Image 1 (cartoon, rainbow, N blue to C red):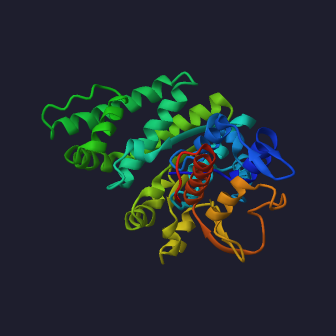
Image 2 (cartoon, one colour):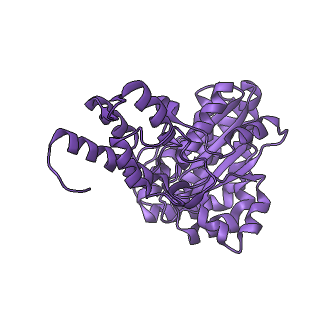
Length: 358
């Protein structure tokens, strides 16, 4: 569940000034229904900003431009961790980072969501690195003619793995070649028995896979003339104890790929006594601030939004978030819900569809 950057500022300037009409004498807002619907749709707490909707993104001090510059400037691939809070706009930030990099056309971005590939309840380092290796191979293969020798070596590795797995699983049909592993990943996500067998077979061969994937990375970077950045999102949705085991126990292996890497992780890990050990394996960490829900001496943001929907002229045109008198902070998901409630209530009150508070 993700939310917007500082969309309140955008909605105030862009929507209220350019699209909404109000009478300056009585400050009564004359909103067209389609504009209310547009705001309601944009402030979706379950949908991150991506693609065209990134035009609503506003910088929130998350060091994105700095990270892009560091990746471009470093002669060695960087390993970066992103301690994230669920519902705080993390995927939006990563989407913006990927867009910024793609726009400059100097880095090839491979971005995927862990929860789409893996069982988040029982992720371990074998699952993660296997999925990262497959994603890198498939992404670069769409842009670069594969190296025959590397493809042969990957095929041989995959064949040995698949044959060993078939020896322990009756009736398993996943095909042949490196693409067979993609089907295996799908089964690993939903079948606990298959997952355990694959881990048992792949683990002693994992260093060989990393070496082969590094060969693919080196070949692709030379052909593309670009560095490769792999972004693994949604690992912050792991349980903190599980994430601690993954990053504390296996960061040496997780950072073994010869490309730029960004791993998300639960922000709670920062409060672990093992965090200082974990960050030794990484070049940087990205932290993004929480959203301001209550400001010192002000009403709750929800009530403020409800008032603002009725009377946008009551307060001056200041920047609502970048102020020094911060009292409390909270997730963007909560703010999204408050915006939706506020405009839903405004619609209700002005359309005469019933009374009552939200």
